[in-house]
Image (cartoon, rainbow, N blue to C red):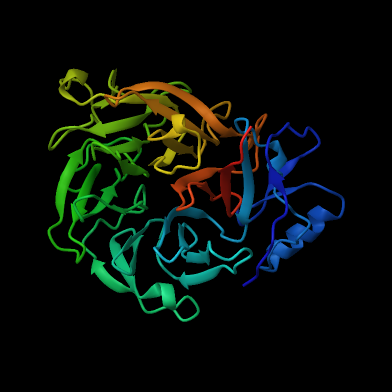
Length: 397
């Protein structure tokens, strides 16, 4: 385990045309240089940490005026969902089989591995002194973990009755205002007609794992959701199907306003695109349309309402969305954090980039996977490609 202090801070950014990034075996980026490349590749083969000289090029990131971005850590491979305990410990799930932890109270705090050997433990949630972790077919719990970072307890199984398929089987989780744990179950395919009571839905359960029930259906793969701070309505992102072209269908931002909604999958996509295989006899008017179309293949993952007070007032109750970026589009899109502005009725009135620059031309050095509002009002961003967590603060114009 290592600790690094990062002095590199981006307040504004300009693209650096001299950077040429490559992806290493573990998914981390590295620049190509005569000696640096050899050192980095050798370190990767040996399972070692990247050398300190391989700093992330955050100077290429574009932020609105007055905002500052810094790297909290770049030692969390495949970082995904984040949650913060009342004691100020940041917990981060991953697709690397591990769950990480680090204190936000101490600059340069070490990164701890508090769970390992789990199957795609991307989701984390906090409740009554315990960390809940998703692991495909299971939800497990780490009790009293805040005081045991160096000697974590054995996970306690909360529920092990979820589907075992790994295709869209990783899941973000969160406790809702009703005290229940919300757990999405993705479709086990790109496009198919699965059992709607088992797949392509959003479910919830009691904190002890009992009382599993359906909340919504027709959801292909949601990897991010949150509740409106005023109305307590549940909003979520959903990833659209593939293999229909570069620009169809859009990823979705959805809103639950009534019980037992159906959002269209696999019959209708983005509110108005009938599926060529399953759409016949299932008009799009039968299903709940999205609150906003986010663009095709942007891979909208983690989302949060901004509930802090340190950003300018116009950001209050806006939605931030981590766009992980496309994987099969002829030209890449996404790879940014988006801001979604709502009016007083909850209608989406504007979408705009908040942070971009992880995509340089068609080269990628980072992929946002989650966003989280910290207690001090800053915004955290998890990047599973760079294995990093960034912190964004407003310091004034």
